[in-house]
Length: 365
Ligand code: MRU
Figure 1: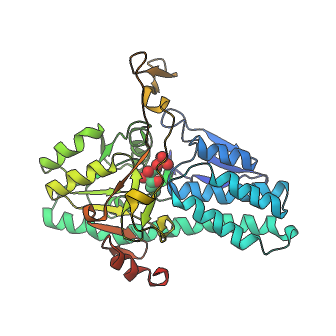
Figure 2: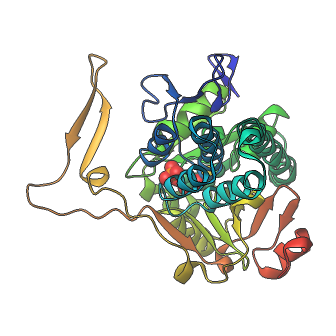
Figure 3: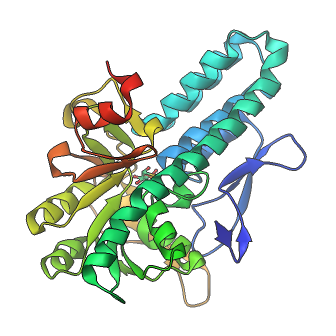
């Protein structure tokens, strides 16, 4: 996607061949800063502290992290250490384990001397694949928006609500939930996006709004609590969100607050779709609420807020009364029965075991 009109990805190998560069997402939208990751420890920190975030980008960064580790020492013990270090960074998005297990399976059988080049090649491949998966989601999801535009009639605007950031910043490029939106915008459909601010870290207000703005897609940021009201008044045509982990039965774990949007959509007959690239499907799980680990993040993300002051500096302020405690579960699970469909790279399917099996027969257990 474009930043100030220039095509960019979220992660790429540095020109000197010794490191990886990323867009530091903790600085957006007030500053555009590129950060350099030169070691596996820096890659792990970037994931944990959310300089990079979003399930697919976490996986891609981990693959680059393995390469950084092997550059230092390609022996078996260091491959195992890098796998463990990176896996411990964030618990919920399954793309992390998917990428790391793939790296280990590919690299462990090779002689150590061959591992560095192979790890770099694999990290590049993981990134290219991610972009192609997201293009598949764009193609599969576009007809959903086209059908709404046809139904509403010439000149009508299609209103999409999204939660968190499942845009290109959450992936290597293109995005998942935003992919059909960008495709519709490029095809000349009139699209408008309701962007949930997504407390506590405000990925919607800070990241989704920023990237939609860069792409020229009309959008409006709303408080997280406003979605139900807008749905009751017919101002949302469909919801599209991302996923950090989808079970083999179609339950979806995504940024906290997604579940409440699904309930409101269900109550109001608004279609609720999840953009789910296959690396975010955990084929071993069948009950999302009971089986998916939910990350508990620092309570400070709830009790404090950062923003730009009138003089341009970014400052953090405290929100709570002295002595009040805060809790910060970062994800929730939406049961498959509340989901209209899953938009995958292979097409749209019902959010259930049969639907997923139909598109991914090779994964059927
Ligand atoms: O905590 P984050 O910002 O990593 O959470 C991101 C989300 O919940 C996204 O919706 C999800 O990873 C899908 S990204 C294509």
